[in-house]
Amino acid sequence: MTGIDGQVVAITGASSGIGGATALLLAERGARVVIGARRVERLDEIAREIRDRGGSAVTCHADVSRREDLELLVATATDEFGRLDVLVSNAGISKIGPMSDLDVDGWSAMIDVNLRGVLHGIAAALPVFRNQGRGHFVTTVSTAGLKIVPTMAVYAATKNAVRTLMEGLRQESTDGVVRTTSISPGFVDTQLDGSIDDAAVRAQIRRNMAEFGLPPAAVARAIAFAIEQPPDVEIGDITIRPTVQG
View 1: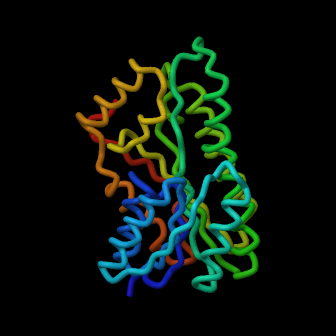
View 2: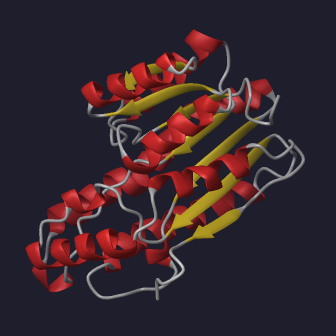
């Protein structure tokens, strides 16, 4: 038995990268996972892999910009397993580029997914956690919010908004019912660059990922560490980056 064994964990953005690696690792350690993303075919592949290894997984289409999709994700967990112990809000997009590009649609998309998506998850899961008397929000933020660099201003702003949101929720939850954890990864070798429209910026990000990006499993282990702590221990913030990242 571990601190993860038997827990019910819902994960957004679980069709690849950090979300997919987290689903595989937590299921391996005994969690029952509900994995959500827009790419249902890829979710089904991950769920089959988990089941083939003897784990427990169900899938749910989840576009985090839609409140009803997060409500469905949480309802799927409670309907299938009777409870929800952890919500990992991992879905995110990176429409980065110089602000002079005036990519207003890209800015709005990041707000919808990176910030509003987290709020939708809180709105769906918080009542469940309160009714149960226990629950844990784990949210993927970014080191982009810790070191502000050109081309990432709006992306960093959405991530820092989430960081502020999680701290506010933590301070409202000191009765011991709800735990919050913010995970800030640096460069991780994922498909996040696929949402970058600026070709030059996308190429540079891809080079960095290929040269020194962490494997998604490294971040999954950090998430598992936060989840496996006993109920009276809260890991508020974890920053995880390649040792060579500036």
